Picture 1 (cartoon, one colour):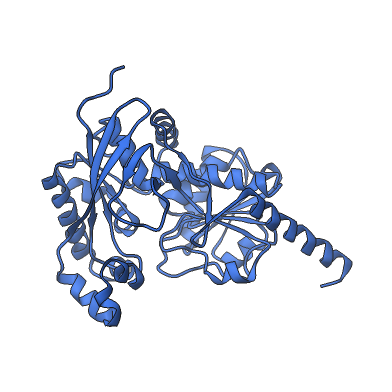
Picture 2: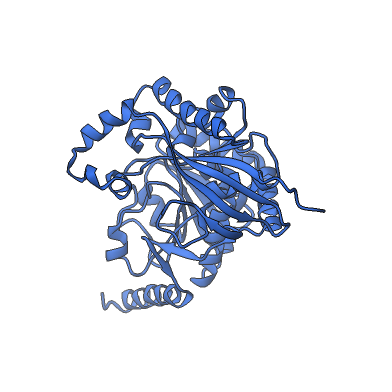
Length: 371
């Protein structure tokens, strides 16, 4: 099939995750109090951050787009009246429409507030996606690959899904039911967790438990996928089981940075980092190597390359057939998982194997009563 001579057009909505993100973009705010910044953000309109160029599929098709900033910090998305938050996100999306975008991706908290994109989509003339389908696919893929490098036989191990009542956690649990030994669903609300458990049990039979205690869940799980919408870290250094793999899909991250300093026997990886095909220029530095993007961003790009201008990943129940489809489309166009990143640095296979050896040596020392 001949490539389409017209590039796919998309936009992706972003926002700062903390004050440091704002300082990186505008150094003059370094002396400003965070409360003042929040007040400024309440009246500040969305704006174009950068142009995205150079995306070229294996098929020869191309795509170009824009990053649009929605000026709120994570806690503002959760604390401000929902109508006010919706209004700001819709304004950002309307700007994307005016620029010529044919599909919009919702990033970070813009994709999880309220009904996870459904209200936003109803108020626009172009389709919307949260990017959750490809995020789910890459999180599961990364967890399985990391476990193999850590010599973990996942078919015999328990997997904890932290944030199991959200769209990503729920779907990850469904994808892993025939791959792992047991699953424990972790969330804040026991009643909602029970509903998710019943939903997954209907999907397929497996040893499935629920808990609201994150520490309890992690201390009995060699595999962890964490995808909460918390504005603060929820996984402390004392929580993980030695030798475990934690795939942290959340932004801001669920695993606190002290884990990197205190737990050299645990592998923590960021979920959903993807290599984008072509000579890509995002026009903005996210701290990743050139051409590397989050999977949620990549899903929007994939749909633009396909000229698949339909609302795709919305709401809190992502169908697994969409996860499978977007995975196939990603392969078709040349998107692929980009290694393993942990606390802002890339890990080699040798470093991962060293973590595994550390865990094994600690285990042996404990058996001998040395520590």
